[in-house]
Image (cartoon, rainbow, N blue to C red; front, side):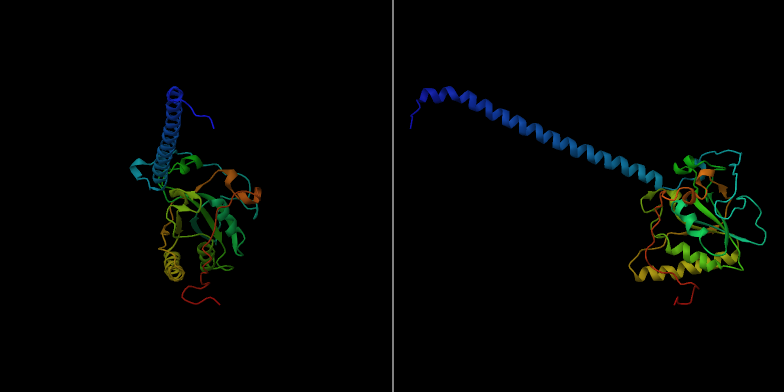
Length: 265
């Protein structure tokens, strides 16, 4: 084994020190990069939180977009029922419902026996004749809704409310699944006091069922119907025209009685 002289060891010290300093600098650089990454991630989360907060907050009427006086033009016939979307449905009843993205919600109702027409649009807010982009901004106060036209001699309001409650999660506030924003809030907009009474009774009954299963408070708003503004043509019966299109609806898996106040068999 060779014995190194003290002089030789002394010559190696600068190299050893330099190598050690390089290691320290590399470690310090890695630490700085890690801290910077954490900082940027936190800022991104803060920004996202603020943006989501703006989307889920309800706009006040004084801050709502001005809109326009021209109505949205709807043309053609219903893709399923073949009737005009804006015709006068004499002898029929109507109900407006909001349960998330209106594409999937409309499909749920056009399949119900006794429903004679459906249309998607905007309601519940302030901006007259809004566009889809304006509603998505969260600055109109409007909700994405489905206007359901039904024959009361062939189906009941309670049957429609059953479809409504079972096919979305009414406890999520201003969102529905991955769709976040006040335009996706759960809502029932009624056309008569009788509809109001049934809607309120159904909410109470379904709340009991949800509570039993561990769900929170229902956030569904039940209000008189406001002006229904038709959505753009390409939104109407979207999932009929685009069978593989997006549908973000998902229920809780909790059943709702067919007749409120009477246990479903």
